[in-house]
Image (cartoon, rainbow, N blue to C red; front, top):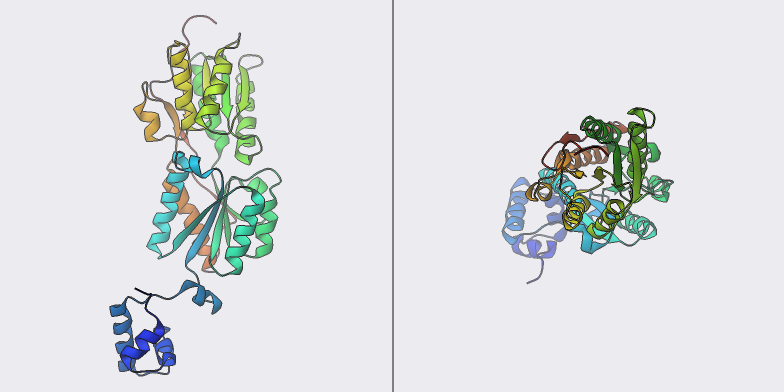
Amino acid sequence: MKRPTIADIARRAGVSKGAVSYALNGQPGVSEATRANILAISKELGWQPNSAARALNGARARTIGLALFRPARTLGMEPFFMELISGIEAELADRSYALMLQVVTDHAQEIEVYRRWWGEGRVDGAFLVDLHLDDARVEAMRSLNMPVVVIGHPSQAGPLSTVWSDDGLAIRETVEYLVALGHRSIARVAGLPRLVHTTLRDQAFVQACQDAGPGRVEHLIVHTDYTGEEGARMTRRLLSSPRRPTAIVYDNDIMAVAGLSVAQEMVLDVPADLSIVAWDDSPLSQVVRPPLTALTRDIPAYGACAARQLLAQIAGEPVDLSVEDRPATLIPRGSTGPVRGPR
């Protein structure tokens, strides 16, 4: 079966295609009785406007773009992005907007995808995620004059609108909690070092450890690609070192669960021998034993906030250049506890 067209409606109504176009677009040129008849026939046939054709006429596509630079095979394993997208989708669905998602292999391809989508009228705006230091995408998106919201820290977003949360506060809360439990050797298994949020978390972690007192807390940061494999490898390296940390903070829940498995494999008791904290809470963090202490926030609400900001831009409404969401908060569970014995 083919998609119903304006010609099909015109044939059924016994009018010209021009009259159908006037009726469907709410323009004058047809009687109210004819308009009502045309609308009823279009509904009966299941006719919907063609988004590409509407774009050529300057109408909105009612679609938002999101290109993600990450392997497609790992995307479904990351609770953060799945929850973020669910929040975006919920807000867009309420406004009859759709989300167009594409996985890309690098930033050059991402820029090209956004340029093509915007040029062809496929999207009304886009999200930009995972900001890098000196990110070329910022200037490229600015030059397109397309509505854009960066989901990330404003320090590297240039003139683009941002929705963000203060990761530094969450890091400080975590370090202070671990120090209060007696930990004096704390490691951080971080994400990609070129990411802006990784850099900001690194800086906050070092500062929080230093603020605990001169020489009071030894600290170490290792960087990974966020996968469970890399999280496990770095955990083995840390736990095999002569100065084994008594606490490890992971940049996502996948790596934290992998780290817990490595600790158990090495016959270390969690939390007596090692305390573990996961960034971003998820069901995964709660079903393992012991359940993981985690930094939690309402990620779907974070995505919904970004969607509202972008839709407001598209509608031409005044928007704040920077919108700060609530920071993550620490939820202590069974994976953290006091240090056992002198170290």
